[in-house]
Structure formats: structure tokens, C-alpha cells
Length: 419
Figure 1 (tube, rainbow, N blue to C red):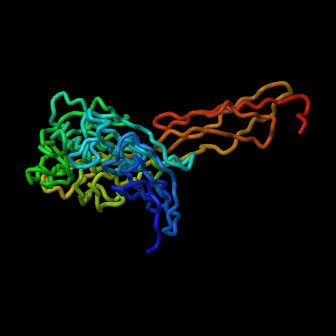
Figure 2 (tube, helix red, strand yellow):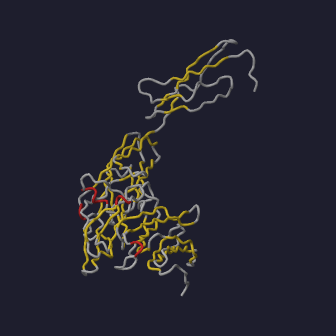
Figure 3 (cartoon, one colour):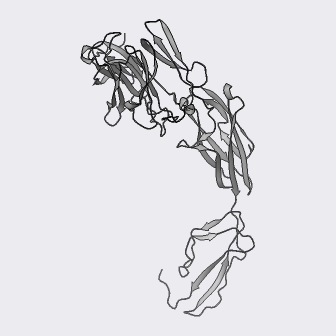
């Protein structure tokens, strides 16, 4: 025995997660006897210390963790798990609390506040019906085949709740980048004495399916997700936008242009990916193959290294080992241009001859751009302060049939310029 922790009355649920992000698992206990949540932080050595107690309006009957704001550390979520507590006026099987005979449930979302070094209740929803158990899972693939669906496919976790006394299975859909809305609570189906609930991919099609126990009839009810899973394919940028063409622009010969993107997987299946490049000499992708875990974005880097002053293009093909779409590949166009500066002076000297005091002599300094891309002259300097350069920067385009001329004006003064 390593440690005994004092909690509230009648603890009935327990979960663990690294809520504070210090790489140690913390503990949370639901206490049904006094309607509280006891939270314990792991102090890195496996010793737990109290981190707070949160009072609930209804008796806690279930406890889960999940990043209900999204599964990725992008615009769709912060990458941290919240604590979700289901409270109900049905604390024990078949027995209703007399003070709450109307039949209600409460969902509380609790998150770690790093600034205050504590846990806070960020949202609390009162729902109709006596909740018994719940799960957090993403079922948004069903919206792809639902006409006029009020929800769009995202990566936010939805909530499914069994209601034993009401013989119901309810769901609370989670809109992208929005708080949970109690008005989104809806009935999924009528299930007599619905009690335990679990989610998993029954048919391995990439959608989350459900299993609910019918307690009084000794049955297990399976619900298959009728959504249409799309094979994850292609690349997205840091904002989650699809990428069809990658243009590296102008890259100097001998240098390497870099671009970073993500290979997304919004399904519940783990895949392996492989890539093929039509030009693997001047373009490269890292990694070229690997694993694509469920619900994650894998970062990839694409390089362009021109060897000549010409335009390049290639096709990047990405393929997954998806048994439903074994022959499906996605193509991304890669483009880039090799450039090389080449400056030439037809004459490296200017002779102004004898210029009388107060007079002005003008000579043309010719600089030719023999490269294949435009240059800008950003600065210039003279050995003598008597001859300031023209206004900079000067446009300096590649030579075709003419040349770019730069006029330098030298003024002879009658008195010396102080140094």
C-alpha cells in the first residue's frame, strides 16, 4: 500500500488523466453521497495531493475525460482534455430522489486553469431526463449523408446518454468551436432500461458505433453509424484548409525551399500512408511513408531544390491502406522555379573628365541583369561623399533585348565638403 486519500462520501466513479499538463496522471473521484468531485494532483513522484473539491447540483452517476473542444491542438481544440461529469436525480438503479422527482440531469464541464493553478467549472447544463451513463465520441460522419443537417463534420466530441428510468437513448451534439447547447439534446431511440453504454467501430468502417445494455430484458442493443466515411486524403495547412497546389515560387539554384503541412485523419481508424513523387530529384517529402493514427494530424515537410534556372513541376500522390478504398489516391501539384542572379558591368569605370566648378557632368553607369529573375538594388555607397546615389531601391529586371540604365549624377562644388 502506497497511499490512502480521503475523499467525499460514497465515492462511486474514478478517472485519471494529466489535466495540468505536467506529464503525470492526476486523479478525479466522484462522490455520490455528498454530490462532490474530489481532485488530486500527481506531484511527479506518484504522491497525490488534494487539488480542490467541486460541488455539484445533482448526484454524480458517471465521469469521463475528453477534449470536447476538439481532438487536435488547432482551431478545433486546445489539445487538453476536460473533465465531464453527469449528475442525475437517479443516483441508484431504479430509485428516484424524492426532491427531484421531475427527472433532470446535469452535465458539468471542468477544466484546468493554469493561470490560477486550479480547476474550474467552465460549463454546466441542465438537461431533461434522468441520465444513467454517457460516452464521449465523434459521430459527425453521419452528417455527410444527412440532408440539411444542422451540424457539419468536425472533430468535436459528441455526448450520448442512457436514461434508465425513461427508457431512452439521448445525444447532445457538439458544434464546432462552440459551447455545448442544451437545446441540441435529442432522442436517438427508445431502449428499455438503457443503462451501460460503450462506443467502438463495430464494422471497421471508420465510424463510431454504439452498444447499449437493456438491463431488464437481458439484451445488448447495437447501433451502427450510418454515416459515410470518406478516406482521409490530401494535405491541410496550419488552419485546416485543404491544399491542392503547392507553389514554392522562386528558389535560388543550390538552395532549398521548404513548406510544412499536415496529413489529417479524422476517422477512428489507424492507417499507413505512402507517397510517390513524379520528380524525386528536385522535390522531396519527409516522411515519405509512415503511420497515420486515428484522429490525428501528422506533420510533413516538402522540399524543392532546383538545379537549373528553369520552371519545375511534379505530382505528389498519397495513398492509404484503406480496405474500403484500396485504389484511391489523392494528387497534389508541386511547382517551383529555379533562379540565379547574374550581374554584369560592360564597363567598370566612368571618366567624367574635367568639370568646371559649379557645373554638372552626367555619365551613365550600365548594370546588366543576366539572371532569370528580377532584382532590386537596395543600397549603394560611394568612396566620396560628394556623389549621393539615386533613390533606392531601384527595380532591376532581367535583360532581354535592352538594358537597365542607372544614371549617377556627380556635382563639382566650389568649396570642399567637411568630413
